[in-house]
Length: 88
Image (cartoon, rainbow, N blue to C red; front, side):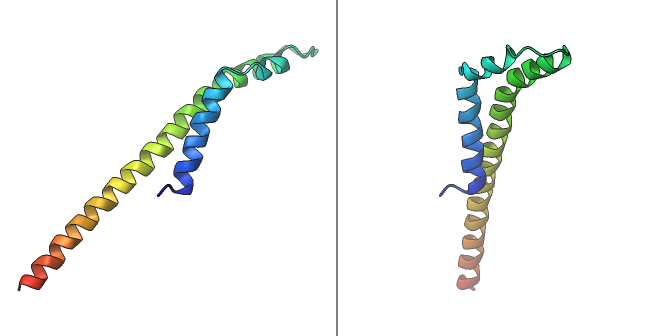
C-alpha cells in the first residue's frame, strides 16, 4: 500500500523527468527584461528545478521504502516474541 509521502515523492520524480524534456520552460527565458539578473535567475531555476525534484522525490520514495522494510522486520520480531511466550 502506497502512502501519501511515497506518492508525492514519485510524483516529484515524474515531474522532474517531464520538466527535463519540456519546451515550455524555455518560453519564459526569452522574456525581454531590463535587468540581467531576472533572466539569469529564471535560467538557473529552470535548470535546477527538475534535478531537485528528481533528487528530493527519490529521497522521499527511498525513505518510505526503508520505513516499510523496518516495519516488516519489527512485525517479524514481535511474532517471534509472541511465539516464545506461548511456548512457556
